[in-house]
Image (cartoon, rainbow, N blue to C red):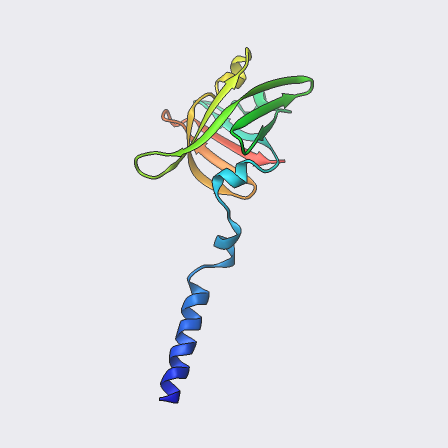
Length: 135
């Protein structure tokens, strides 16, 4: 009986340790990831590579759903939200207030296709790709 209790205890320990890895525990929610720090456009592809049009732009997503985009002395503001589509995929909706058509081209619903603590990869409904990188 003592042997069975020991084996059972070891099995419980192994199962509890293997149920989640440190990598999974370190990844927080997309909402927490995006609302920490400043972000830059690492890649923007609406049919062709247009990443260069976002050089020197810094995006700051706040936890209250507001967004600030700065390039030098120019500042644009807007709102963002994170929702789930019918398939439970995360979707980031951007609504940027600007007269700059480059910036407003990002006003979309972006499906999150990959994320980690320093990068987000997204696509819109037309397969336009947008990747953000933490500064």
